[in-house]
Length: 390
Image (cartoon, rainbow, N blue to C red; front, side, top):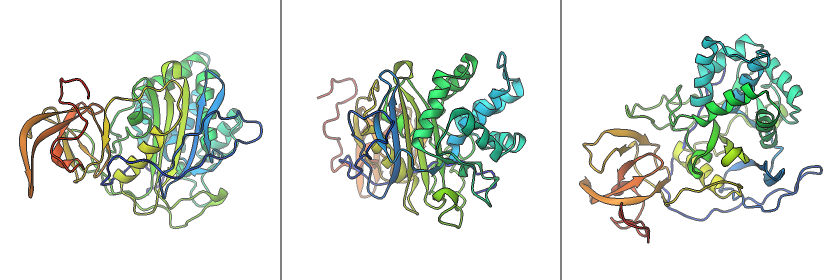
């Protein structure tokens, strides 16, 4: 991990659709709204802090270890942005030079932009200022010895909800619009390390949503984008296992945060740690399953069936042939949503042969069924494209 922590996100697993296990929700803290339904299911081996807040009713529908501190990874970029905008009144105009940095930082998790704002505006002092301004209870600057690592800022799920509530309910309208409009335009590929960052919220629910994702630690990285270039190998996490405020700096972290539903009805914060050695596809899939299990008022879940995949750098193409343009490459072993299937070019991966291709609506493209974890060439309970669902 380089100085001024580079963000990260990664996952891989050879999985099929299965039920989740573990993860009973914590008892709500005194003074917090009582949950009506606890649905969060935490995959084995995953440590999670979860909070879902329904802005229409003013209640939490999910709270699991909501005050536990995690290293923020790129979620701290929300605070970097808000701190900068704090001084832009009265009209909160963003200069063109800053817009050119802030927009990719919010949309594509650009790390160079975060380095600039961290070093220019006071580093850890930014965290102290924003914690006081927003009334954050668990947020703290990076621990001693890691002052330059902005991604080591400590953050909890409940503080993440507080940040989004400030943006949506208290921030001046130009600030709210600037932040949320950029989060609604989240790009699938991160700009710094070419991670596929549309996991968690972005994969679990149909739009409208707005997301800020975070990742940190040593993952086996995948690829993202039509060029299919592999992301650089992640640098190792800190050598210490625990830092100040009992924040784990060793296990890979993967976070999904944002809003879901019309009028940003629900605020969702899912902060996770994964066993050392976890691949990007495995973590990606686990965070997706956890997020899909949540009680999120106003959310619309996409139609289709979830399947595991196998193989590394599996191409998603515009049509059901290997000659069609490549849209992106899947993280190794990631779980995907299949909307329908169609006969296309025969693909041979000895000893297997398959003419069926699966349409992935969240990518807008096709992969050969040969790479989907299913015993049959034709996927069960998945209609042919153009046919009604069974």
